[in-house]
Length: 164
Image (cartoon, rainbow, N blue to C red; front, side, top):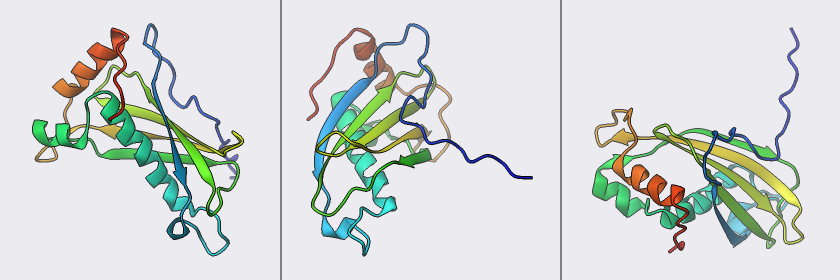
């Protein structure tokens, strides 16, 4: 039986929860390096996860959920889903803008959407990650950890930190 090809999305992967605050957003620039491209000089598809991680890290700094905070609280948040939709190639030496959007979710998880755009704002790729929380033994946390609760409290109050 032939199944239809899934359609590529240009964002809005996660539905907005009723009454939720607007996403936390970061934007950063990155030059495409030689070590990131394939023999054709195009950004290798596997490197998009690295670009997404840069935005993820900046979002963590924005809401006091840095790697140091995770170590202090003895928790981890492994990625359980990673998705990328490709629209246009990124090329060697090109400067791209990576936009990360932390989408509000009441559950014990992190929903983050990403965009990669060219210098002329052309859409190169979109995607998302879902991260769940586990303790230091790897046991899933069913309730949100305190660090996420603190982040949400500031977020709901309209406070926006500065990415460090």
